[in-house]
Image (cartoon, rainbow, N blue to C red; front, top):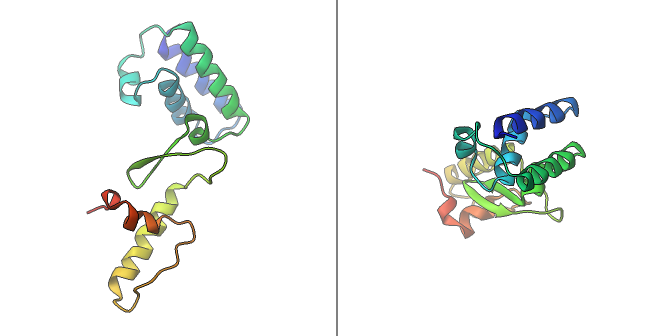
Length: 136
């Protein structure tokens, strides 16, 4: 089976399971099952997929249909340009959390009286402890 047909099947399965982002999820999970990047996967859609990779992919699609987040399935979540290991013991940061972090940092930087901020799992501490996450 080709990567293209497997991707289409995964998309259809996720779509009919009413997953929020069926195409993106199918793409990310197939890339994960093939141990490649999304970009390389897209460049190799006509290529055949091994039976082992196909089985891994179908298992990931089934688990995604059960409502398990893609980040838990991959065990990776990107946040602030960095990849973090995640599993069921942690909350997966949402994309709007990065927006919240930027807004709060803008307020803190704009007021010299604010020298301390309580970080309640928003990622602000990331800026202090992981300076490579700093954005221009």
